[in-house]
Figure 1 (tube, rainbow, N blue to C red):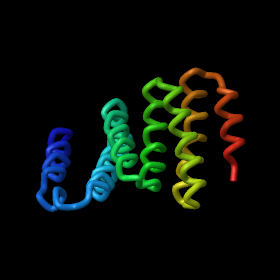
Figure 2: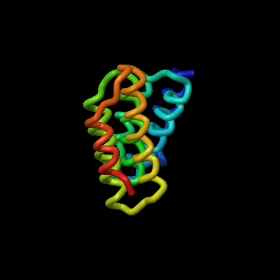
Figure 3: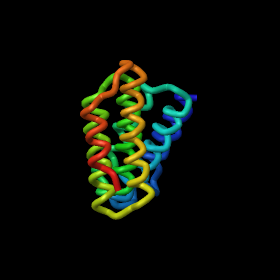
Amino acid sequence: MRRFVREVLQQAAEEPKFQAEPDAKKHALLAGAWAGLADMYLTIGQNEDGLVTGQKAVEQARLAGDLPILAFALSIVSVLAGLTGRPELAYASSEEGVTIARSIDEKWILGMALITTAVLCFIHKAILRKPNLTWMKAANSFAL
């Protein structure tokens, strides 16, 4: 399945119609595709692959300047980073996602980013069997 999805993404990137589009649109389309794939990996529990894919989505969204997709991809990356034992990346991604979502006034994306912060608190507590007060304080500061 992984190979199939990667081949589809690679073929999409090489399609003549994408080559003819402005770079920003190409990057935005790829960012959405990578973010969707990262979300799929998260759903099926392939967290390492999901993190790599999510970071590609973040990179493409930054190149495109697509803030809604960037905030969404950062939310996915933050959960995957938390699940793979990278708390610094998890928190930084979550914080950036919330900041971006607030700046563009996208309530659905802001909700996703805030839920991500709550999930990170849960992950940290479940894995280490103790709450992370820094993340919990941060989650409270992000409250609507």
